[in-house]
Image (cartoon, rainbow, N blue to C red; front, side, top):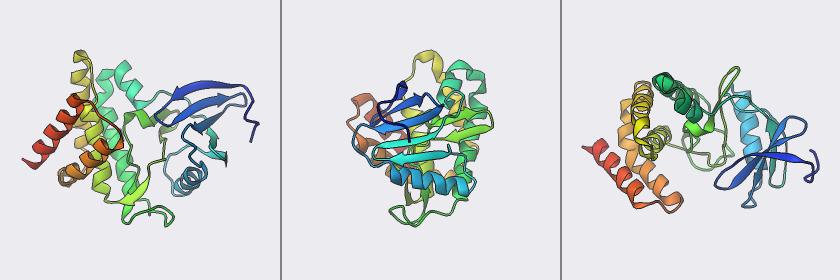
Amino acid sequence: MAPRDEAHRLLASGQEADVYLRSDGLLVKRSRAGRDARPEAELMRYLRRHGLPVPRVAASSGTDLVMEYVPGPRMSEEVDAKPWRAGALGRELAELHRRLDDVPPPDFLPGEGGLLHLDLHPGNVVLGPEGPVVVDWTSAVRGDRRVDVALSWLVMAVAPLRPFKRLARSRLLKGFLSGVDGGVRAAMPAAAAIRLSRRQRDEAEVSAVRRLVADCNG
């Protein structure tokens, strides 16, 4: 792996990590929270062996995960730039969940049950030249697959939007829900608990989450 003091270009900053483009064209995901990068690297290698579209891992050391750079917009950016594609993009996201259904969960992940990404929303899907690629596997565990699907639905439904984006969100959600099992509604309370436990949410989002849970149970 390249030295840590090599010149990098910052591409993005998330809740816990920064992502840099290295001079050799590879990406470096660097945890600001001191998280060991090796478990995520091991999972991504496992997923590639099972045919899931994730970036190829080049190396991992300490808090740095080095991987291929997949050119293309995030799915969330594509929805913003081309809202007429929102329905089709929602169906693509549902298809990624169906592909996850077919991956045997690795024994080294905590929990029991299927493979859960737990953050599979349009911001974590890159629309690469060969198709959508799923990134950010730091939260992955084993559990009820319906919870993973419900959490994706919840994230898309409660994200704050400017008024003129609401139609695009409606189409995105309609496309997504057309491709997933209706039994996902029963998993919404568990998904909501995960969403609200991760960090402090503002009152508007908490209210939106509770409304969606109530609608699913109605």
